[in-house]
Length: 139
Length: 139
DNA sequence: TTCCATGCAAAGGGTTTGCACTCTC
DNA sequence: GAGAGTGCAAACCCTTTGCATGGAA
Image 1: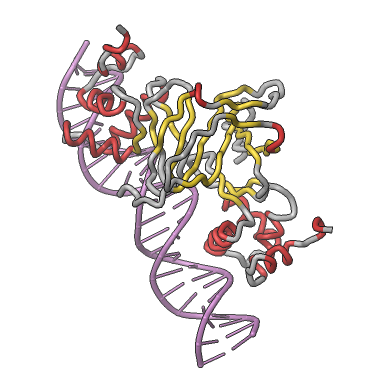
Image 2: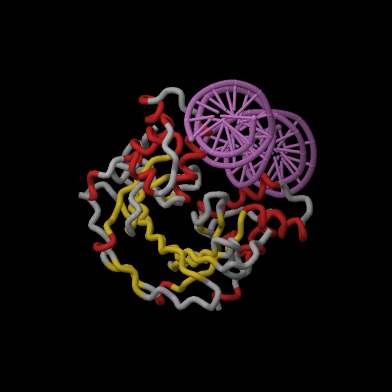
């Protein structure tokens, strides 16, 4: 019943001491796959735990990233997006709205990944499908 | 003899009035495929035309991008990289050094691009192969 | 003279840092 | 009471903007 592991356990499992703010941030991000900027995380966390600062959100996101709980997506030059889906997958990015949508790894395939010289290690393969929707951007 | 078109002609061809600074920036970027940050462009241009400001480099890079002379690469959260290779292709990005290397479109293939709903228009498909080299980063 | 391009410096926006306070063990 | 976690504000870095100057048509 792996699905029932809650946010607090996810933190403990990776060795992160649980605090009020960390738990609140975990609950915003981890229960379901989402794509949020630091500011969006801050806004949502503050709804639940108003005594949360921007610095703590940044510290915690960095910590979560180091522990592999979230992934940093580089899709937009303006701001970083954090992805709580840590399974391998691809992304669809709406330039107009800033919306990120997951594309399951099974749906796409990248053929021809080049051979890497010695001492060069593959980290990951990012695929970003950029689209325009002509819809209004999220504020 | 398309290859012999020089930087000045490239600008005129897309309707950009040639100035000293624009020409210097064009000569840094356009004669061969390169991947440079705004700061790297500024540094190289200043070697040739010291009376060039940061603002002009940014203005000009934006102009070049709008005219399709360069492409903005989103590979690093810290800074934007400009790519003077406008043909479709993919990228290899070295996280340690910041080095970007082109992968010709013929060498790779992306299979399974999802169907897009009405009103959503494909802009482009970015593929970034992220590697670690354990080498020293460029300053 | 009227634009447009430029340089300079200041402003802007996202992210990080310094530091003092709190809490926990 | 030592160490870690936090909030606040200032600092930082890349990029953009405002404004006055300068040059070209």
